[in-house]
Length: 405
Image 1 (cartoon, rainbow, N blue to C red):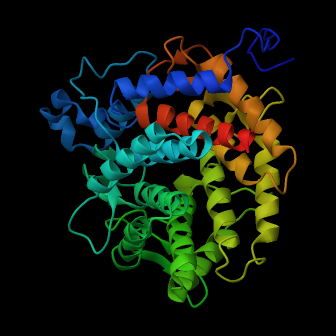
Image 2 (image 1 turned 90 degrees about the vertical axis):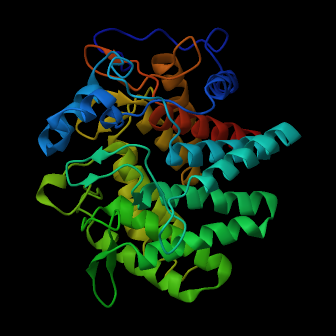
C-alpha cells in the first residue's frame, strides 16, 4: 500500500499527471509573477500588530507566535499585517535554480534571469562585517536563541556562497569567486568557534550565539573547502577538515546525526541530515586533503538517511520515526542530495524522480505553487516562498538538468 493515509493512492498515470518540466515551468512563472517575494514559515514576528504589543519582548510569546503561524492550516499573515518580502537564502536558491536552468536550456533569457538573481543576492548582503554575509528578513526566535532582523547567519551566507561559486563555474567569471571568497572572511573572523582543539572545531550559527549545530558548522566548512580548493588557500582547507572531523566524531552509532549538541537539540530530521551529508560530501570531494577520511561516516550516514526517511512511493518523512508531516522542503533537499550521490548510488536518480512525482501529485496546487506540509488531518497550504517554492524550483531545475545530460 502506498503512503496515502488510510486509503490507497491512485496509480501514477504519466499521461494525465503533471510532468516535472511542466511543474517547473508553472512554478517559475508563479514565482516570477511575485518577483520572488513572499511569506516564510518563520516571518510571523514581522507582524506589525505583534510588534506593538508587550508580547514582542517575551521569548516564550515570540516562540509561540512563530510556531502558531507556521503550523496553522490557513495563512494568518495578511490579517496580522505581515508583509510579503524577499529572503536572502531564497534568492540564493532561486539563483541556483536559474543557473541549473541556464545550463540545461542555454538561452539568453535564462542567463539574464540567473545573473539578475545573483546581482540581487549580492546587493542583499549585510554590511558591517569582515566579509560578505547574509541574514534573514525577519526577527527569528528559535528554540536556542533570538536573532534580530537582518543579523548575519552562516546558513544564508553559505547558500549565497554556493550560488556564487556555481556562477563562477557556470559562466567562467572570476568576479563571482571573489564574492564567494569574501564570505570566508566572515566565517573565520566573525563567527565563533564554539568547540576548538588541535584537530577539530565547530563554527557558531551567527556572531552572537554559542551554538554547536552540526549542519550549520558544516555549511561554513563547505564554503571554506570549496573556496580554498579554487584559490589554493590551504588555511581555509585546514579549517574545513577540522570542522568536518567534529561533525563526524559526533555521528551516532546508527549513522545518524542529531540537530545539535545540546540536550534540547537531540532530534533527527530529514533535511538537516541531508544538509550534513551534502556538505560533508562536498568537503571530501573538493580536493582539500583527507579525501577518504570521511568515507565511512558518509556511507553510514547516507545509508541511514536513505533507508529511514522515505517510503517506497517517494513519501518524504520529516522525522525518521514518524510518517507525518510530509514536508515539501524535505522533499526538495532530498532530491538535491540524491542527485549529488548518484554516481555512488545507482538508485539515487530513480528515487529522486519518485520523490519529485510524489510531491507534484500530493503537495502541488493547481495554481502552480507547492504547499508547505501534509499533516495527518490537514494540509498547510500557505505558499512559503523560501522554504517551499525556492527549494522545489531548485530541486526540479537540477533534476531536469541531470536527466537532460
